[in-house]
Amino acid sequence: MKPETVIYTLLNASGAIAAQVGERIYLDTRPEADPLPAITFGLISDVQDGARPIDPELVTARVQVNCMGNVADELVGLRESVRMACHNQSGTIGGVEVVASIQQSMGPDTYDELVNVYLKPIDFKIHYVR
Image (cartoon, rainbow, N blue to C red; front, side):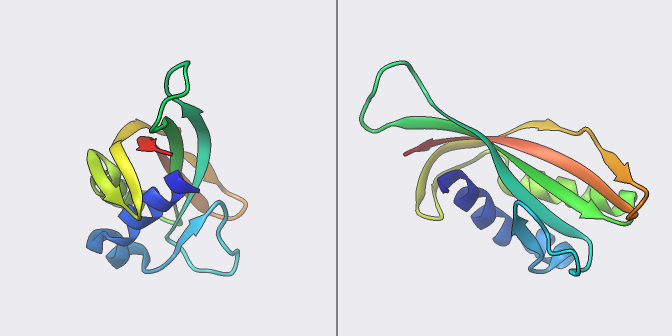
């Protein structure tokens, strides 16, 4: 749960994100009844760095952050706020020793017309000590 803790801590520390989504930041899924915009995030992978066990154990995780809403243009700004909050970060974050949190990729953007929800993802690689 360490990479998720890092992302959650960084997202919650951002005043720009709070202004856009309030407290609607969720691990994995958003409650259907909650209003949009919102953010969900989840672990994609978590792999030990190197082939030999070392102490401390360095790990690289990939975490996807999904910006969700009914207006695509608003999500462009929200995703940029997420990037600014989580990219190029290091130090002790949420009690986790982070070597680096770096943006890996953005997209693909999607739209679900049945529920009128746009999704704009952004992924981060988090190098941390397990």
